[in-house]
Length: 374
Image (cartoon, rainbow, N blue to C red; front, side, top):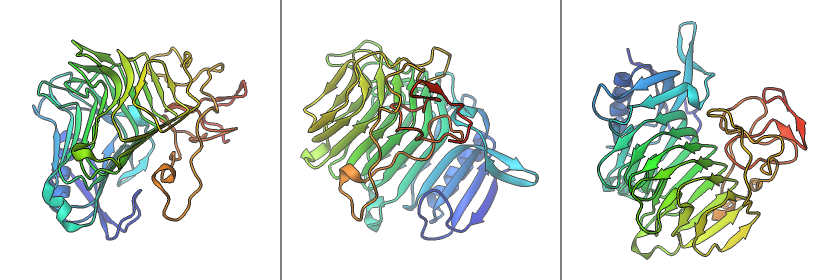
C-alpha cells in the first residue's frame, strides 16, 4: 500500500510550500508515486525502502513525465520505525537497488518545453540508490535518462551506484538539456556502451549553465564496437546553439581503466582539478592542476572502491569553496556531507578530502575506522 505523508518544508532541498512525501516498497508503489508527483503541483519526495526491486516483470522503466514544474527528490535506504513508515534512512546506496537483468531501461524523467513557461526552475535529486543491469536498444538512450526540453531544470545526483548497465550513447546515465548538473560521490562501474559515449553522457542545451562532476569513481567501463574517438567514461558533448557560456568543473574524480578515453569534454570552458586519470581527452581546459596519472590503488575487494593505505588519492582533493553571496560558477558548489558509503567519518576528515567517491579510513598512513567519530 502506498504511504503518503504531508510534511512542512524540511527536505534536503529548499521548499516554498508543503511537500508530499511518499514511502514506497514495491515497483508498483514507486510508479504510482511518480504519477502523482508529476501533476500534484507541490514539491515531492519519494522514499524507497531498502531492498532489491526488479523491473523486468513490468516490461518498462519507471517513468516520470512532468506536468507541473515542481521539485522532486528520490532517495533509497529507508526503513520503518515501529508504525512509522520510512522514518529512518539507515541503508547505503548498495542496499536499495533497481534492476532489470538487461531487459530495458530503469528510470526515465522527461520535462516538456512547457515547464519553462513558469519562470521558476525546478530541481531534481536522486540520492542513495543503485541502478544495475539496465539496457536500451534505441539510440541516445541509457539505463537512466533525464531529458529536459526546457533547459531550465537543475539536477543533483549524489551517492548513487551505476553498475553493469548497457546501452547506446551513455550506458549508465544520460542527461540531456537541463540547466545545472551536479554529480558527486557516485560510482560508475562495469557499464558498457554499445557504440560510443561510454558510461555517462551529458548533452547540454542552448540555455544550459554547466556541470559539476565532483568526487566520483568511474572505473572499468567498456565500449562495444566503438567509433572513432570513443569515450568509455565521462562524455560531455558540445552545447547546443553555440552556447559559449556553458562551463564544466571536473574535480576530485577517479577516471581509470575505462575503454579508449576516460574523459571527453566539448564544453566551452573547462576547469580540471585534482583528478586521477590515465587516458584523458580534455579539450583545452581553461584551468588544470593536480592531475594524477598513476594507479589510484583502490581496494581489490568486490564492489569496494576505497583507496588503500598507500593510495595517492588520500587527502589529495580540492576543498570546497567558502560560501559567498552570489558566487561565480567555479565557487558555487559543495562536496556534500557523506562519501559514497556513508558512516561517521564523513566526506572530509583529517588533512583534506580524498579523490574519488569513497573517503579512505587511512590518513598519513594511519588507519582510521570508517565508523569512528573523526
